[in-house]
Length: 180
Image: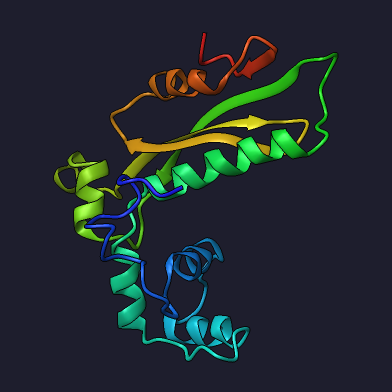
């Protein structure tokens, strides 16, 4: 279901016409872990669709810019909900076994504006930019429940609190010794 927090501009214009770079194709390309030159990845991906010609790297970049990060958050929430509705899932003594952990991410190879957003002090201190990441994970079913990335100054405990919205009374939550 579309919502206004998925695209960066007017939904009546973005991803509404039948194009080779529709919402599904752009999302699949991004989630497919692009590893080589973008034009090579586009050619490889669009070989699966004989009626679609591979778009240019510029066209893909423009389409990608219309997606907000919240699109992927919404997709994750829909996938997790669908999984629990349709798949017999493993529980540990009747409890869903969840783990929360965080880490620090190096921001090598990202734009200066991205580094400045996540770690504005990095340039002043002449070091690599950093970001904070955190994941709530269903251990028994090997399923991410929630994930977040935040500026480096945000502590892991603060990010963990955001994951609590995805926990229920039938969950056993595991965290390492730094959280209590």
